Image 1 (tube, one colour):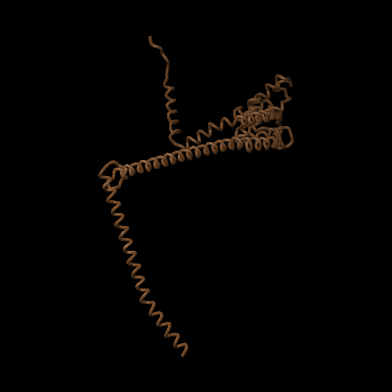
Image 2: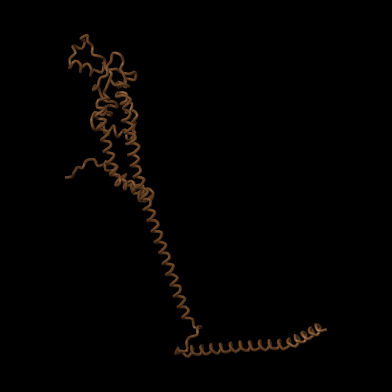
Length: 314
C-alpha cells in the first residue's frame, strides 16, 4: 500500500538554491555576502534602537491622529422629517449612507478638518469623523498600534510618504508637519544611514581580513621558494665537492699508503723546486745586469761633473 505524499512539485523550487554555489567561485561576491552576514550580527543594537523609535512614533501617531483620516464632508441632517426625527439611530443611518457624502469630480471623498488650516467642506456639508473607510483601501491610518507602526515605518523608508503627509495635513492642519519632520530626520536620515554605515564597516573589515590572508599566503609561498632554492644550492655544493673528491689529478698527502699517490706527490715537489731555481737564476741575472749598468754610467757622470767644474772656475 503506497503512501500518497501529494503534489511535491513545489519542492522543485528549491533547486534555485544551487545558484548559491557561485558565491564560493567569485571572490568579490563571497566578500560581499560575508559582509552582509557579518553585519547582521553587528546590527542587533541598531535594530533594537530602530524598533524602539518606530514604537514611539507609532504611539504618538495613535494618540494624535486616531480616526482623523476617516473625516468626510456629509450633508447636514434634514429637519423636514424626510429621515425622521433627529434620533441617534436616524443620525447614524443618515451619515452612513454614502449618497449623503460629498464626492469630488474624480469620484473621491476628500478629507476635511475642523481645525484652522485644514480642508473645509462646501456649503450645506459638515465634517464628521468615523464614517467610511480609511484612504488607500483602509491601509493608511493611525487607528490601531499596528497600522500606526506601519505608517511610521512607511515614513522612515520614505515609501510614498508625501501622500500620507498631505492626507494628515488636510485633515489635521499644517502645523502637524513637525511630526513628519522629526520622523524623516531621525528615522530616515539617521537610523537608515546608521544601518548602511554598519554594513559598510563590516565590508571594510572583511576586505582587510582577506587582504591580510592573501599577504600571508604570498609570504608563505615566498619563504617556501627561498627554502627550496637554498636546498638546491646545498645539493649542488655537495655534488661539486663529491666530484672534486673523485678527481685523480689532485695531489694527495704522503700519509696516504698508496704508492702511486706518493709518486705524484714527489714529482710535484720536484717541479716546485725546479720552478724556484729558475726564479732565483732569473733574479741573479737581473742583479748582474743592473750592476754592470751602474759601473758604466758612473765614470761618465764623474767626467761630466769635472768638466762642468772647470768651466765654472775659468
